[in-house]
Length: 144
Image (cartoon, rainbow, N blue to C red; front, side, top):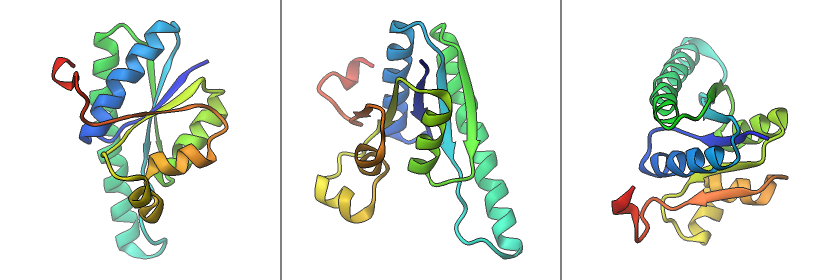
């Protein structure tokens, strides 16, 4: 059962990737790295340009994440999905029969996450598989 990890090069995603690689290695599984690339709007020339720019940013971010996985001896696949991050992660987890979804957090309060619709908050309420939320800063973050 693969491990799905949301990755966008943010500080939270960098820490989440580290944990996702550890979990994947412990289960001798495959890591599925996902970038949700939903462009706002749906019409016009600007939409296509924005969508293409988001896809390219996603591919670049995921290339970096694959390099980290490779350095750790973990097999990884990548998906740039034209959906919002939480929807993209839920879709990938469903299609791959994921063991869990790993995402980073920004240290926001539960109320702020509920009001602003953070990806971890959405996943915790909607995911049928376990969600591992990795904080950006932890007591031993200097060691990772």
